[in-house]
Amino acid sequence: MYFPPYNPPLFLQNGVAMTVYASLWGSLNWEKSTTFPEPPYKEQIFIGGQGIPIFGWVAIPNNAHSTIIGTYGITGDLENQWFLRLLGRKAYAQGYAVVLFDWRAHGKTAKLSPTLTSDGLYEGEDFVRIAATAAKMGCPSKFWFTGYSLGGQLALWGVKAAMELSESKENLGITESDIGGAAVICPNLDSRRSLTYLVSYPAGRYFEARIAQSLKNLAWQIHDAHPGSFDPEAIKRANSIWAFDRELVIGRLGFSSPEAYYDASSPLPLLKSFSKPTLIIYAQDDPFFDPAIAPDLQAICAKNPAIDLLLTHYGGHVGYLSSKQCQRQAQDSDPWWAWNRILQWLEQQLKQI
Image (cartoon, rainbow, N blue to C red; front, side, top):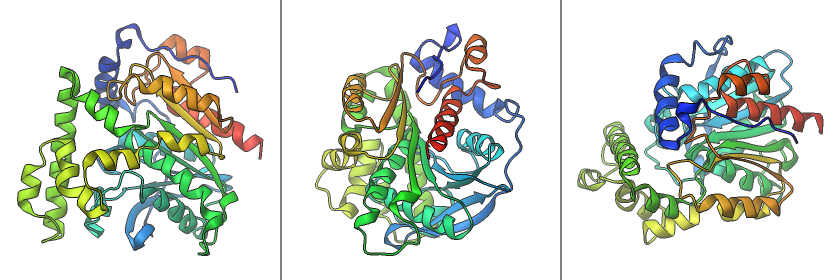
C-alpha cells in the first residue's frame, strides 16, 4: 500500500537529536498535540503465560470494530508511557477497543509478581492470553498487537504465539483467525548486535547507562515488593544491561550466557515465517540499533508478502516527529507520523477482511 513519505524538521535530521528531542518535547506536549481525550479505561488483571498476572487498562467504545493490544519499551509503566497513551487516545477515537498493559516486571504487574522479563520468549503468549480475556470482556476481533522498541519485539513474538494457537490443545475462547497481526515502531530485532553497537560510541554509552540504571531501579522495586525474590548483591552488580541479564535474568530462564539469551529472544529470524499481516516501521538512523540490521531486515521482508516494511532514512529511536510540510502531505492532524501510519495501515487491513 502507499505510505506518504516521512520527513522531519531540518534540525532533527539526526538520529540522536530526534531521539532525545522527541522524548523531551513529547513528554511535555503530547496532551496538547491531540484533541482526543483519554479513553475511559477500566483496570483489569489478566492472566498471562505460566499463570503470571498482568495488569492492564481496557476501554471499549460503542460499536467497536476491532481491538488494539499494546505495551511499551524496556522501562516505564502505564502512567508515564505517554507515547503509548497517545496511541490509546487516537485509536479509541477511531473506534478501536484499546488494551494497554504493564508487561512482565514493569509497573503494577511487577507488584503482582516477581517474575522477570524474557524479551518475548513468554511475553508473546501473554499477548495472546490478554486477547482471549479481552474477548470475554467484549473486545471485538480482530486483535492487533503493537508496541515500540522492546515492546515492538514483544508484539512480534505475539504474532508467533498467535500462529501457534491452532496447534494448542487448550481452549482459550479465541482462535488463530481472531488475531489480525501486528504493527510495531522501531522494534528491537537483534539484541546481541545492537547492544554491542550501543556501547561502541559516546551517545550510545550514555543511553545504555540510563537504561541500565532504570533496570537496576526496577529490580530494587521488585525486591522491595517481593522480599527474598532477588539477591541484593546481584542487583548491586547489575550495572549494565548485559550485567542485569547475566545477574538476574538468564539463570531463571535456563540460559548459560547473555549472548545465548539474546540470540534466542531476538525476533529477526522469526520474520521469514510470519503469515499474519505485519507492519514494521524502522529508521535507518536509529541510534539504538546496529545499522547493519536494516539491510538484513529489508532482505527478509522482501521475501515475505505478509510483512510491510516502512524503512525510513530518518526517525531516530521512537521519534518520528514530522515537519509541517510532511504533516500537510500526509494529511495528518498532528506530528505523530509513525502512529498515524499504523492507524492508516490498520484501516486498510480491516477493509480487506
